[in-house]
Image 1 (cartoon, rainbow, N blue to C red):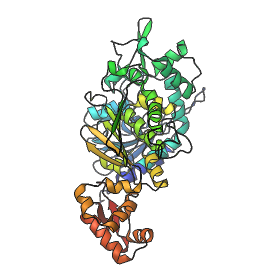
Image 2 (spheres, one colour):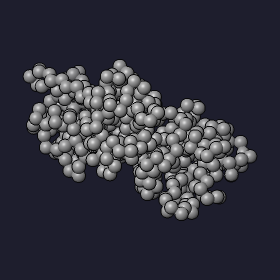
Image 3 (cartoon, rainbow, N blue to C red):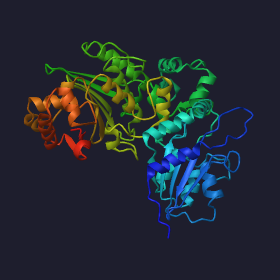
Image 4 (spheres, rainbow, N blue to C red):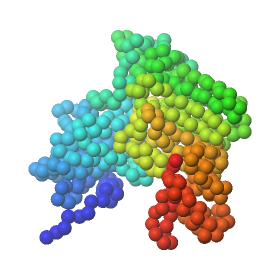
Amino acid sequence: MPTKPQFDPRKLMELAIKVMRKSISEPRSDGKASPRVGAVIYKTDGTIETACRGELRDGDHAEYTLLERKNRGSKLDGSLLFTTLEPCAPGSRHGPKLSCTERIILARIRKIWIGIEDPDPTVDRKGIKYLQDNGLKVHMFDRDLQEVIRAENKEFIVEAEERAAAGEEKTKAVTLSAFENPVTTANLSDISSEALEQYRTTAKISDPVGSEAFQRRLLHQGLLHPEGKTFVPAGYGLLLFGKAPRDIMPQAGLLGTIHYPSGKEEPRDFDGPMVSVPGQVEAWLRDKLPNTIDRSQMQRRQSSDLPFEMVREAVVNALVHRDYEITGAKCQLVVTADTVVVKSPGGPIAPITLEQLQSFSAPMLSRNPMLHYVFARMEMAEERGLGLRSLKSRATELGLPLPKFSWEAPYLVLALYRSRASAVQDLRPAVLKALNADDRTAWQFIATRNSVTSPQLMAELGIDERKAQRVLKKLVGADLLRRIGKGPATRYEVIRP
């Protein structure tokens, strides 16, 4: 009797990518790129079947081919599905065709793993939301595999984003957020022409601000809504470009505070258009912190000094990915002698976890895709996730402690450390008191990593094995490290306090 194969999500993700590479591009007279999509189903008896886009008929979606063409008469209740691209949401297909998400629900699939989001910023995450709203457990592919999928679909993604901006894609019926809706109490006079010009110039949009083509672009991006012969801003449009968005949405903006060593505090509210906030933060901090924050700019460049590259990433992602449904809290920036802390209302968006954020392995996923699209076009958002790659790599490059994510309801808190010693100063008082000078020196080094081995600590501090083991044991007892493995393979995983 054949044994049921062992379930391994990673191997099935990799299989979906392998199948994706077999996709057949449909003939197109306009020369536009077709997506490469692979789908894998893991049935309750362990049977595995696959399909790619266009496998049996030009243009057929991989999920449709797998569920309807290959398994129309099969009982799929409780099966698991892996697909490299977010399945289309209701309203995306020409009627009376069902969307792929509707077919997945009807097939009674139990869980789904999705590679990357739909690249159209006006429909991004709507397929995911529809599945979640209908009870499916949604997972994202591992971060490294997401990058493979995006790289192999680069041409399609670029074209899809451009078609969305030009209004060539059909908006889905699913609403991701109430901020997609028009703000009936606002009008075009509430929009800052300077903020629009900043967007136009930085994003290299040829259409002049105020022109019919430029307004049509904002309309297609979901940032404006038609009202008779004119337009009104959507909630996202008002957040991005509103002269005073807090007048209508009190949760908008950023509250900044500098705590000086003397005990003096300097507060600053950033209440204007969201697209202007990063530059205003830079201008405010430039002269306040000359020792560390005065040599680079918020806008992303090939090279920049600490901490503005990291501060920019943290501030932009806090604004872009916060939960704007939480009306009683604002994004906050708190600067001390040791840390730059950014607080963003709302926890990690499902299925991302705090643990994934802290290990810098969280998959790419946007809470507010329309906001992210604008900041990405302005080169102030590096990627579709939370800037994890930049935060980790820049800290490592500069020999600084890795940034720390934590949850302080209702805020997702990100702490950036301004020096190695800052990691020690940030410890709880009881822990700090229990550590001697050697322990503290060791923690300054270990905090720059996700894990450490005894030989690495010996080499860094110039100490022998006995002393290294004593220090590591002390840090394990202080709940700063977790021992993994045995013998020569032993390593110590960092527990962010």
